[in-house]
Image (cartoon, rainbow, N blue to C red):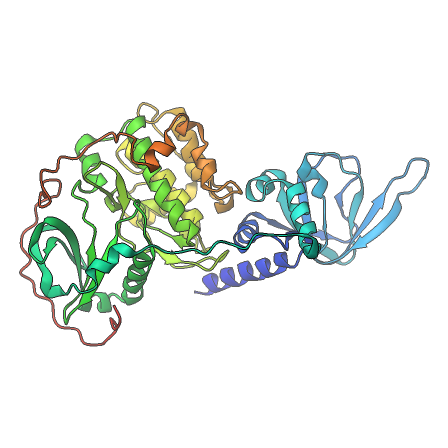
Length: 484
């Protein structure tokens, strides 16, 4: 807990400091948060040269504490001329970020010493993009009276699909078959008001088990996040109910079953098949990330196939809505999919989902996750060794896919593909997706690689068989589920 608190405090302090640096004042909190992740912190004793005139450089510096002296060797003069003194919050070396590598002045630490934050050109380019654009934006902010901006269009969340369920109660719901079981309860195929032509999934969670495992907050978060979403890439939540023993979620049903079941039966997927399912996930993640939601539970078991063959994300028990540019320190996720910063309790954000996306690509193409051991602690040890230590068999996963995995699974969250200024589009532009029909995917005109066999709205042949549940849980009356 001490490590977690210190990590949160340091990240918060660093963000607060960077927001006060003049050239960064027009950046979003999200960009500043990512900068805080990738900036190195260095200390120089008084008299030490941080930069020497004439040398090549590719780093940008912000003074965190102390002072530096700027000097310049002028032609015809024997001693360097003192130009100015820079203090806390001042920056230098920004020309190196434009590609002008030769330093034009000396930067010397003043006694007793100076602490600087450093950002190299590559990281700067990924996170922020073009320095000139940043400077222009900053200048426009300073000349606010001269800048005319269109007011943002009002955003309307469309949830008309829930209106028809407003009067539905638990008594209207009839169970037809079981789709899945777990520690918290079961998922049943159901119909409403006896209409078997239209079926749904009813997720029933044992209230006593939720209280015993202290998962009340996660269950409410899952409900609230799903109520906020309305997209074809995520399973829809229509209505929630509760009684003495369970809380319930009435969900969109996907009768094609779990992608994991199809993967298990086939062993692994080829490039074309994997690319389609990864693209579906990417659309879902982009939607969530726009809402500042981190998913944290990507895996084939949580990807369901609709009758159309298209994929939808499900199970938002680990999902969390973050304040813009902020992190969370909760340790959660499937061991094989958790990112290094989660294991090390450094705080994480949406970049953890990009790590998981790299693992997901591997599992689809190899038939197993790349980091796998006999127990979670050994799995975490493998993850911390890094993706570069992996020997990925190229008989199933080619060089281009491997290159994408390694760009997604960087140890530093800010260096992962998708975390930069280009966002998800940087992933779409990767060579592995070359020629992929993104518009066809979004319009649902792209033919899916696998079309599930579903004969009718009550067909559960794409799911495993489960025995009836004769274990009746005890009542739970603590009231934690008020408003569910």
